[in-house]
Image (cartoon, rainbow, N blue to C red; front, side, top):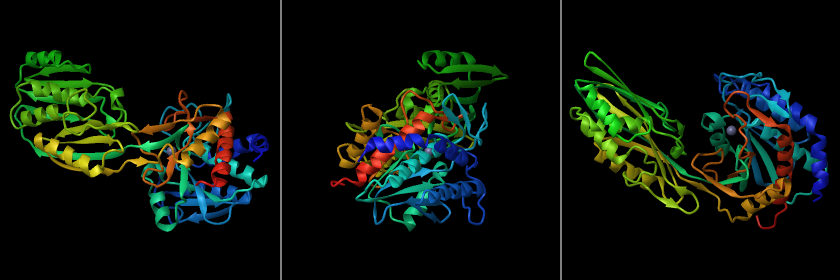
Length: 462
Ligand SMILES: [Zn+2]
């Protein structure tokens, strides 16, 4: 393979790539009301149509799969390799300086919703394919580009695709990070509750989403001296900040911590478990006191590995289990909440659920827990090595595998890894305001993908 020729050809298409990304960004393809022939809304369907039309112009065979996903390929026969990108986005949200749905080219960057997640990477794949096709690079095995339109809202596009089409033996998604993510921990979500009435605990709220460390929690108590609460806060050893105010026999306790994604809880400071600790130290009536003390014992403040609940485990390739008590609410009748666990490949979802449910039972709660198994493609597999080799040859940087606690677009798809496109040290503001991709990266990613496709599809060991 003459890589210089391929890379030169990709360089020559730089302006065209910018325009194509601009066209895709112009569709506000976040999930909207379903319409006839547009299960995720008209904009997502139009964005898919536009991408498939461009692929057709390049001379690829294309196919619309149930208005949910698209296929593009120029090779014959059963594909060995698939590349899975998505064209849906999250809504723009607030704070944009540029226009979210109109590409702005400025300072070597392209701004717009989806520029990095995941329209830019999809464009890089399309131009990698165009280079290989136009230059007649021989490929022994087939490959295909799969374009989904529901990644941000639960990946029902891929579920549908797998029910109607076969996934290639190997695939990667350019919808995460370089160099390459080969391990994604398993995930458990648990909901628990117990009947609870109290004369002293009036209200308690902490956390809104299961998959985040709560930065704020609050409670109201009655008939407990303020001095007792202030003393308990001071003696709790918590770094989260307590705000305590009293009026007419009622005391309001507000706790401010630091939010973090549930897959990296050590980066946060859990306001909710700090509040639980404080409440377990003051003289509340039963059964509230017993339930809160149980939670404080099984899921202590500042503990993120589930040790006390008996679920802690770790392995050499995916690291340690993480646990976050992320939601708790008291409505006057019931005390209930939620827990998020990410567990390493040495464990199974059923075994973690059993241990967690037992811990919640010890604390006095009934629990319903469920989740997904870990995802792993061995780091020494020829597929992973081939992709990392392509990455190293184009960027000159070291190619290494990464294990994460989150899940990517290929979670649960056998033979799937995440390959691109964010890099450490650069915040492309995905899901935020003024999302961007560097134009140099858009072009370089196309070279990495062209090299990866050519090498995987000409390999004799895959
Ligand atoms: Zn994405």
